[in-house]
Length: 366
Image (cartoon, rainbow, N blue to C red; front, side):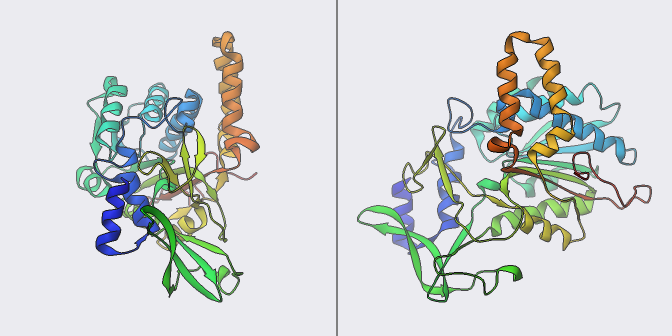
């Protein structure tokens, strides 16, 4: 990977941070997500579905509830972005099978990694043939039918490339990536930049302030919204991040479940940044998509009864009481994933028989 990056710099000069992330994570042969397994205890990080089945089961019941509140439809398209090992979808489908009724659910998985796709196929084999795989959202759009779409994106947006800008001497400069002494290193552009600052942040930066922007996130969101406006439906986005514009450096690398230096282990560690949920909300609202107020993962899961589900699992598996209790704590505790992770729902329906005050479960008042 280091040689690939050096070659890029030699040919084109400094690369943007977004280009650096894109190459390190998604290079066709050497990208991080092209590896066979990056999840779980043997990988570099553990996502919520891998912590315990409760997470996926609760999401499955949320989906059933959404489908029940919508006008009767004979079928739905259920779409997961970045499905990992397929654990979340397996838990969702097992949970939904008991309650979804007669509606047909077409499963669509959007995955760029051939190795992860193969893992998902094996995990979900018993649910075929209603499962289809797509390399990107364009391929998905051309393949789905006209049924309403339900999108799931759990820890998808955090891995999308970002740009960073640093404020020095009353000017903004983009943070770039270059080569020095044979190493790939961060550097600053020599030319001042004009980042797309939200109005609330204009003329408020102090020397050394960092502003992050993610055009890639808005690019993917636009594609999701376009499908929602055509097919109607809802999108559930769960990720770590912040609800509110601000300054700060959130870029991070993780390897072997520990934070790592961003410019080491190139291509063999995860690189992510916090999701700006306010930017996603504003983009959706500008396109007349309903965006429910963002809530914490703790509120969302607790409102949906994950505590009761934990008690049920403990009654059935008393020997696993400690394991289940620890998993519940990781998912909802304030000092674990509970507050850091946020949840948002975006939906678009033009049916006259849906109340304008339609609020998905988990997004009600405190």
